[in-house]
Length: 322
Ligand SMILES: Cc1ncc(C[n+]2csc(CCOP(=O)(O)OP(=O)(O)O)c2C)c(N)n1
Ligand code: SF4
Ligand SMILES: [Mg+2]
Image (tube, rainbow, N blue to C red):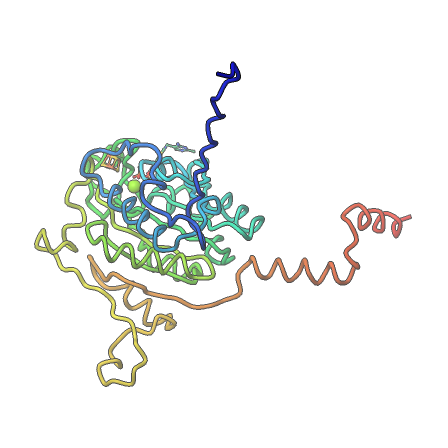
């Protein structure tokens, strides 16, 4: 027998990358990273489970997915999704996510956060992200309270809400998220409820396919500090679940009563409905994205300058100043 070793090198395990055409389809097991640290029963679990489903449906190449967030219980979201991602300063996820979207056309950018992160400290950024129409999807998990910091009044807390900052009850007029987003100029505005999984999946899926700044506000109960806050829209708790039926443009008489999501006035009317309001796509229009406008400008400039390098352009400018 030969003294030579007959052992062969162990085969290199090739795990095929998930997602994309001709590749292993994206599945929950590939998308899960850390175990969520939310309180048992928190509405955010259902949002996360629905988001996995949305990614499975979209089947984007996994390495092209980015999930981003600010600070808060809901903003822990990116920890639990096996994608590129990050956790940024409280209220500042949107400018950071916008920069990623503008700089990397190959990435699908999702931002997550709470009502405090989005409408309070991040309100300014939300307003500008909406009007600039940078391509990304923003999911606001609205529990009408600051959950992470253990019960302060948030911008969506109703008048009378008792919290550590308002022990005698909130006095100030709350933000109406749908009205605010429409006014700010978001090109896709939808609303859902964390107890309605199929509806959430449909809204987030549609938002992700929208070419522009798309927002889905999801009423997501904080069982620890705002229990039962959204029961009024939960049929299992005796509430009223009112969805918006969109026009099918099928010429049928019943279609006349359905909602045209390009009609801003009609969207605003839905936004102004009394609590608990309506759920579905309020508004969806196409307006050139900042991504396209910037790309066009860059292309035009390259053409004009015959693709000169940044250094050549700078040298040219200095030469003119001499
Ligand atoms: C600049 C700054 N201010 C305040 C805080 C404290 N802080 C952390 S999370 C948070 C509120 C989070 O509320 P929300 O966005 O509604 O998320 P939730 O925890 O309810 O999901 C606050 C005030 C902070 N981290 N950074
Ligand atoms: S404090 Fe509220 S929002 Fe935060 S994890 Fe617990 S239930 Fe969810
Ligand atoms: Mg909150």
